[in-house]
Image (cartoon, rainbow, N blue to C red; front, side, top):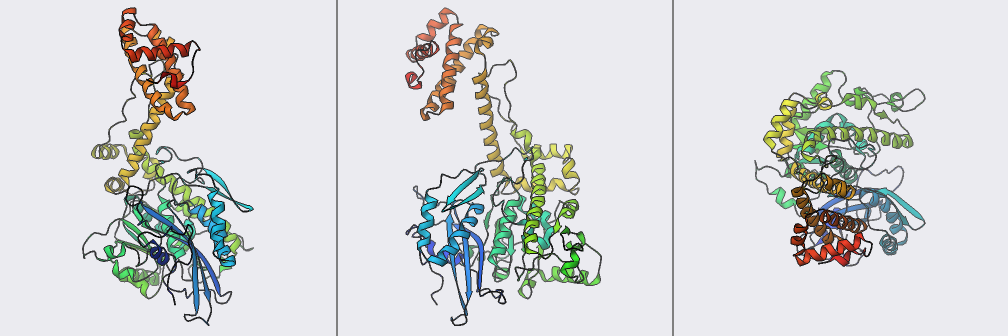
Length: 592
């Protein structure tokens, strides 16, 4: 009867700040000992889930360090001899990096090992992790752990904008956002028709309360929702598993009636939240009280075998299993009752449903739903078919999001110098963005072929909500900054490739003088960058030195004398001349 507490930690002082040990302890267990354990099979039940909470420990500057991601291996053991009829323990990995694909694999090794050999497993596994190379966001990695190796493809870094919005990524299996490994199909199997509404809610940054019977189900659903809008940078606060012990609960619980709920996505299992957070405008209930009974079965009580082919092989998932089949008075009454009772109906019976006042613009794509496969009764086949179904869903929503973002492409389009023109000028600025002009232009052009087939006539409202929501500006600024950096890189490469003598031969005297000044300015900038001694910056310096000397050599004698009257420039030209004649090739020789 000790309650939630931390028995061991590595490093030992990692949870010593701001009551982090209590926060982690309360977030690492289900709200109550699960009464859905498979009693007929085993008295031990293992599960994996995740949480996210504010990191109370300050960084070196004294400011808060953002969020911590917790990945949990929970073991519940039934034993009638114990006071509560059982006990539970959790092994937790904490990180500021949301690498769910990596840490879930690591937990499957670390979790059982901790229960087998005790706390020494923490030190043992930590020694292997300490030897790993630095993370390579957006890249595949192979990380050794004992005699095994974890093969993962990490998600892109938070400041990585991903592919340009006008291009569909060639390989949808490569992660273009967080939680690409989330099981979308399993998490929303009973709500597939609502995925398009949920996609919109996430795009515009609406608050959502995700209710599920267990932490694995709610955390998987929240992760799936965040992954649904990739490659948009999801900037809304999300908590895969939220408890009443979270420091933000008191603030949310104190919201006055009629006060707008802040943009958040909260995954909960405690039904108390249905009353305390009743101002959340969008509530989705997912999962099943029995984790093994999440398959979609036909209406009318058909047996599982009848949903498949005669030999039990997987078949296409029919739309009549997705609650849009034939009209029935009973179904209509149940639907009206569900809507009238609202989310509080979950207090008496858990059911998969979506309650929302939001009017969606996007229509469910039945061609995508018809391609999904019903796995049947075999767990092995179900797992493999879930992989296929997730690939289908991810490909579609990646395509949907990419097409939705495509109209912003002209504001993020880079340019390169025209053939034969001088790269020794400042690159043009990207087109300025004004929301009103964008919306008016989009209204006259239309949504494009892909979206016009999948959106209603009020499609422009979705863009307005996106522009006003919390996700647009962080995504746009990130994409804009990436485009500006890309443009600088392209112009720098053009300067590296230009034939300076040929370029100068076409210029007037005034243009040659201007070009000399610009080359000098770029050289000084590259010399500053070359202090990092990268091969690229050193090569750029060498090329610009040669170009500066070439530009100087074609200037009139009186202009040359005037330029040499500046001592620093004279030193720079002398060093450049030495480099051209092969007498020196070290960047530090030209330092001023």
